[in-house]
Length: 231
Image 1 (cartoon, rainbow, N blue to C red):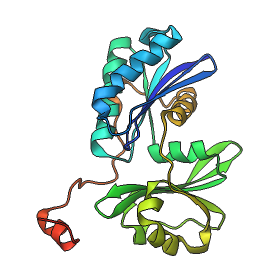
Image 2: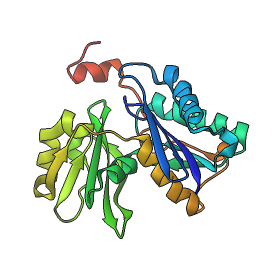
Image 3: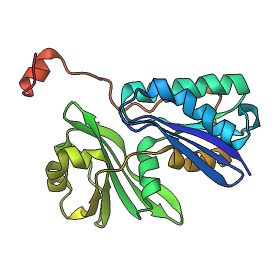
Image 4: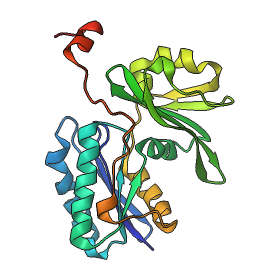
């Protein structure tokens, strides 16, 4: 069985997972701690626990975002460094898709808080055990998110916690349920990474890239003031 090590740090929830010989092991970072202070320790703990080293793995996977700029870059950089050392290929997994995958919902509408009054969003439909993208990952104010066709969609992610009323108004009767307190996890990144590896989607470490849907990562002072914040 393939062996995949996966990282997910695109949100405030850091996690690491190892899928090896059909068994899944996970470690989560302590809330509030800097991801960069914890991530290597979690990786070493998982590998030590499994009795494996990097060169005994088949591939590495990481949550490529969209998500927090620093966290997404951290996961990509760590995976690239490990891949260079061990000569392993890398699979980039959309973090929004990982959240949809973990929910097991037939129709998943994912909205993750992107700060700056915006959300990262995407929609997926499960068909024959495979997630099909219905709305491509993007970023926008909650009142402008893309709309999926049909109803019965489960709203997932922190965007519904921060902008719930606006998103519910925008999506209307398409929503059947909401789970706001859920985040992308490395366990789902590992599962999707395995599927990607089997489909030949793994790339050389040098080609691994985060998934950016936003060029701008911070508001100007004038924009913060206009939004009611402090200069």
